[in-house]
Length: 248
Image (tube, rainbow, N blue to C red):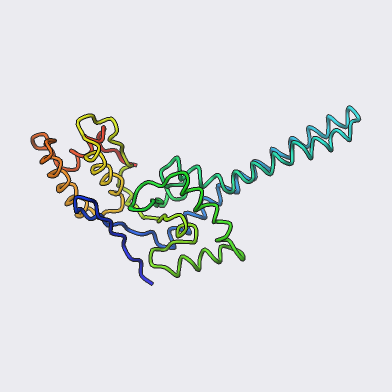
């Protein structure tokens, strides 16, 4: 089953095309993330063993074996359970929230999770899509999630369908999303228009990206924000964003 591209229109009738991530790249990114998670879980386990060993030695020296058992049940085991849960679930939620839809695995494979209309994913959507990873794992080894991804053209697993999210593929040369919040010359609508392009730019073909940048620059020029002499459309939008282009 081929992957349908995602096309989103803006109020200015500018259409933006997205490249949906294929199963292979998502699987590779997941393997990287799981390897990091295993390393973190190992660190938690080693830390727990050290705490238990230290507490055991202290109890043996003082002869307070009952106190040691209480400490194990009340402090150490809850500590291990809490941090293990934090690594298993919080890893994806925190990274996708703080890195605007990316985890270390997704960043290495140039993938990004986005919300409706290609907008950045928020904390609530990230939490919802990742809580449902527990269901995607059923009955074992991500079986339900794999079947769900293969059953729809946008390659969404159950968590994506419920949270309204989508995993896109970026090109290695694309830039991070910029913010125009500190550009006082722009109105709210003009900032939103330029931010939409900058946020969605990673999913665009080079020619398509250049065409859209030119159209957006013309729209802003008609609204009284012209380019400098000899300035190309995309550098113009980058300048409005508050910085010069830089590679990822």
